[in-house]
Amino acid sequence: MTSALTLPTSGQLASSWLETPTGSQPLPRELDHLLALRVPGLIATRRHLHSHPELSGNEFETAALIARELSLAGLNPRLLPKGNGVICDVNGRPDGPVVALRADIDALPLDDPKDVPYRSTVEGVCHACGHDVHTTVLLGVGMLLAQLADLGELDGRVRLIFQPAEEILPCGSLEVIEAGGLDDVVQIFALHCDPNLPVGQVGLRVGPITAAADNVTVRLSGPGGHTARPHLTVDMVDALGRLITEVPALVSRRVPANSGLLLVFGHASAGTRYNVIPSEASASGTLRVMDRDTWEQAPKIVAQVVRDVIAPTGATVDLEYLRGRPPVCNDARAIQVLTAATAAALGPDGLAETPQSMGGEDFSWYLEYVPGALARLGVGRAGPNVDLHRASFDVDERSIAVGVRVMVQTALRALAAAR
Image (cartoon, rainbow, N blue to C red):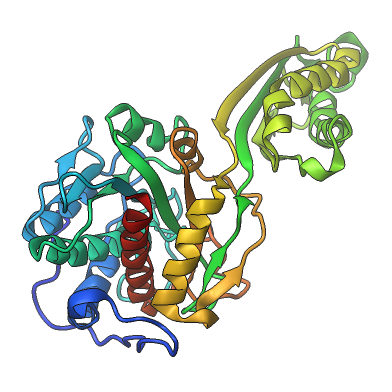
């Protein structure tokens, strides 16, 4: 990246502040007024991050921007050991509990085709999953909670976790945990953008809210040969075809139907010439499953089915099964906190039920250590071309203020409940 990540210094962004909804409760100490004043700057931050995305593992300038903004708010952020993530405690009552809030900060390897002033300036990299919004929301939360802490009205510590590498394996959440990000934490919470929910609603669910997700790569090899004489060699394209058509169906027959196992190959490759049987072929994809027990069994099942399907072809099999992440399983008490916080921030109409997604989320690794919950933040741009992980994905920026209010209320209620 050639341009430094610094915030715009001229002009004010015109923004639409979502008025405090009917039935909601004001934030303490007139923080709603402070938030309203900060909305244009938060939107500017989000647009800047969107224009300057960084791929998983390389979020160095993004982390530097986050650290600068938190320092300007009077906080003391620390970079992760690699320098591409940030942990920052907002210190209130020293003998109070510690609650964590997490945002992921990485982008995806996609071009940005949108005709907007804040489209990506980095070729082949795009914030197509809303992580720029997650980051901006948590920055806003930190600014408001810092104000409460200065007034002596924060009933414990709130740890802000700006996590790298959510989109790749190994997961960035494991780096945060290794760096002590969960030390002393009693609960952890996160938001994720949902284009299928309107602005002003938050999707909640007790139990599994995402699927487990692993990576599967199969490499096949054989002697190669002439397409006129497949009987003298191993027909590698035929073997590959069997792999990608038969294995997914057979794997799903080895597990309970309600486990929701889904094996989908997203890449397949074999050969370069129409009359040459290649000596190598490969396919890679993801295995997703809704329940933890089936996830534990999946590697053994996949290995056996692949061997059984390929054996008659004579091809040699090399299977790489890369463990990804378990399902995010929301703790019931944490959802109670989020429900109360959402109702306080948005009124009763802000609460929405959300189904379990087949998408994977490495927030699940935090929940292996401490209870917590992930919620869906409505971003109000549903449509055929704005789904997550599409380069055309965009958000209604009023969702930023909504997310800030919800997460401030969540932190305050979680601290109160943990006393």
